[in-house]
Length: 187
Image 1 (tube, helix red, strand yellow):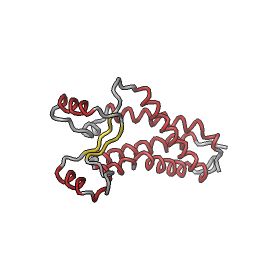
Image 2: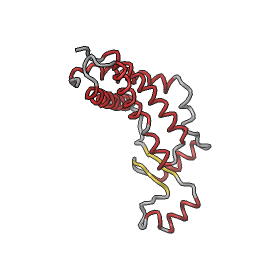
Image 3: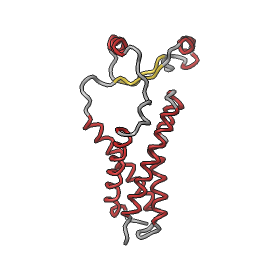
Image 4: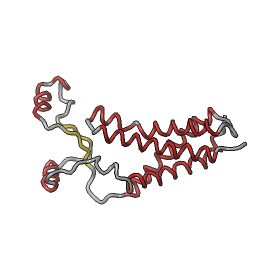
């Protein structure tokens, strides 16, 4: 078993590598440009939502949480009539990218730490570098890559978006596996 403390540097470096790779994926690569469609009348859509004076939260319309749930005749009629949608209302104000980036990097540290911990419980120091790559890459790819599937299953998010997220996860897994293989403790 590899001591967790000996993996702290590879964990931070792996998180940094994935952070940089994610910036390249989202800023320079074209495949996420079609994740969200444009609303035909942007100003009217914003005005309509503003007129509802909704607090920041997640909303479903129609909401299956009506009395009787999905069997409530009002819910069924509204759902069949459409349109139905899920939306997240974000508080007004500027985008605070520092907060988003910091939270994203914290998540990357968590995923890298879990990958390091699990891999370290399987592979000893100076162990087989192919095994280090294999386990850390698979754990990381699964952690990043499959979260979007639940949004497609339950919230009708485009499957193409979930699959693109899975592809991103595979890239992040390969980067993490390479870092762990390179920096795995030798003794």
